[in-house]
Amino acid sequence: MEAVPSSVNGAEHWLEAFDWHLEPVAGVSVGRRKNCLRIARGLLQAAFGNSDPDFSQLRAEHVAVFVQTRAAKRAPTCRKDPGGAVLTFLRFLSSS
Image (tube, rainbow, N blue to C red):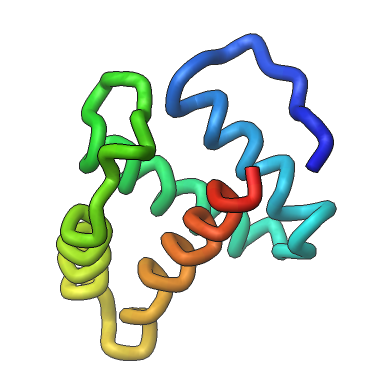
């Protein structure tokens, strides 16, 4: 993957790189891209607070609780959205 020029650090760097990846690489529509970014930002905030992300500390339990909490707040027809967005983000991270 080509490096994304960035003037930001920490979580914002990863979110900027993820945004760059979503449209041209993954072919994600603008609306879905915004949703994925919002959910990825929420995951990073829930797992790391305002600290720089240390992905070696991210555990399945963190992800499961985050997705379950987000899904519970949605209509039944939209409950898969948080899980799908987190999966997309984790796949991106594993390829970076």
